Image (cartoon, rainbow, N blue to C red; front, side, top):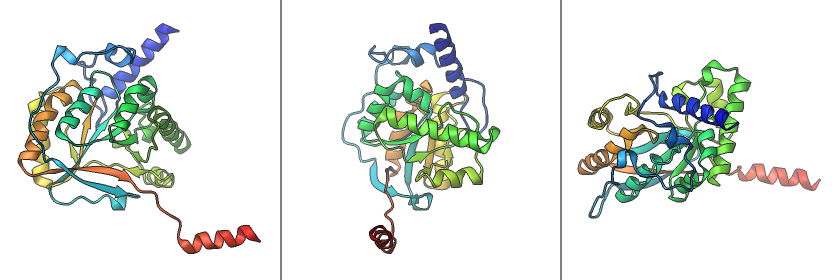
Length: 280
C-alpha cells in the first residue's frame, strides 16, 4: 500500500511538472521527497538556500479588487495579479509565501485538489495568509480529453478537496494546460466560480534560469502594460526569481492587485416574489 502511494505521488508530480499552455517535458528539479514529506517535518529550502531577506518598506501592494464574474476582472494600467498553479508543495510553496509576505503582497493560488489533500496544513497557511484561493481540478487532468460529465466531475472533486483542505470557499478556477471549451466555461461559471485566464505566461516550467524567467515575464508585461501573470509554486526557479521580479515591478511603478470574490445577491423583486410564493 505504501509503495502504491509513493508511486502515485511520483506520477502526480510528473504531471504537475508539465503544466503549461502546452505540454512540456517534466522538470527534473522537483524531487519526490518534496511532495510526500510529512507536513510536521520542517523542510529546508531547496539546495539548502537561505530564505531571501528584503529590507525596508515596500510600496508594491495595490488595491483589492472584488469580483463576482469574469466581467468584473478588469485591471488598470500597471496593475498585475500574481497567480501560482499546481501546489501546494512543502519547501516550494512556503518559500513563495515568505517572499510575498516580505513584499507585502498577496497572490492567487490555484491548487490541485490532490496536492491540497496531501498537504492540508500548508494549504490552510496559504489561505490564512490572506491569499486568493482557487482550484485547478483534482489531479490536473486535461479536461479537453474527457467527456463533459467526466470533466465536470474532475472540476467539482478538485473544488471540494481544496475547500476541505483550506477551510475556505473556493471561488476561482483555472483550466489545466488552459485547455477549455465554451460549454465547460459556462458550467463552471454557473457554480459561482470565476475563471482565471492568463495574460502573461512566465513559462517558469521551462528548464531555464531564473533570470530568463524574470526577463521573459517583464518583456511581456511591457507590451501589455498590465495583466494576470501565470507562475507555478512547485518549481524551484520560481521562488528563486520571485524577489527579482517583484523588485523590478516595484521599481517600475507596478501594483499587485489582491483578488476577492464578491457574492452576488438575488434581485430584490425576485426575493420578494419568492417570499410571496412561500407564504401561499
